[in-house]
Image (cartoon, rainbow, N blue to C red; front, side, top):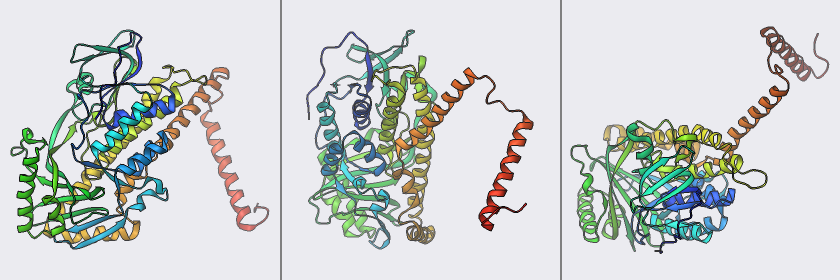
Length: 489
């Protein structure tokens, strides 16, 4: 897709190095450039980016908001490279509709941020071109080998090719199998297979077109699936199977060859047809152009901190900090939120009034980043797991009717499943600004206390007296409101 944009390695330490040039790394670099005026350096292990590889993903309002804040034109290009979701539909495998919701419910009136489906390589390509256009250096063939935090606070990043780069800050955006995490977190955590394997593929020129995202589930086949549009005459399908750990073969995970894709999808189509699946769910399997087989893994235990080294100069972002499961469609969005939040905190705490980059308050930026993002991503991961369990229960005939009634009731009351708002309605800047305001108030309080020691210290008796006085004032105000005149004495 493009050639290496690297230049000769500078002797002066970089301000920010990003390990990993995927979706999150690119968005983080552009957000830092836009909000802080700082040029990050990106180091990516791949030799190049290829077209027509990988499957697809959904993009939702919370992630699209980060992109719009970088550049509204970038948002437009991404939307043009994908396809909008008109509806969100839950169905049985025979085509019986259970419930349907308008996808724009998730925008809460901000129509520019409507959900889309998009091929992963297309999103990567648009982001890469935008980053290069912003003058962000991008180095291919740079797999991270080791990370050394020096006594002076600088960080040396060593690469597999023998080269290295020294930087003030290192952000690990290198995915679920993060080398940066492996080095700095050690054996504090590990990835464990969840028991679910997914075959996902791209179908082109299929007679059956998708205008939204559909969730058919089957009690006959024992699987559930997802279908969503990714472009004109193109859609993505995902079929999730419960496969025990002892039967799972991680050696078979990854991109399938064209021949393997067609063979596996034809075999699956035959099985679904025998189990009574509706033709519009089978037809895409006959038009597959590319397929991927993946086994979903979770980090156990979850990381309790995302920043490491002296003065916390090595920070994890995206899947490197919190590998996702896909049932709520928020995996990529969580990484994008991480990127937007960290860039915004750098702007607010690490760029002075003259526009100079300073690390005096970087530890506070990281503290707030972890305070916001660790609970947030943990909550969304829990929501995703619960939604996945619900999908699996729909495969159980005895539980199906109760779940279908629940889904119908939720849509009637809320417009869509409430769990979807947990992800899509989040505003990363508002969340960060709320914590920043607390920090500012704390600084103001400390400054006043330094000049006027004891000004905020009240005795127990004074606290009780103030509380009683406040209670009396509220009573009098209430009586004045109720009786329209002077309060009763």
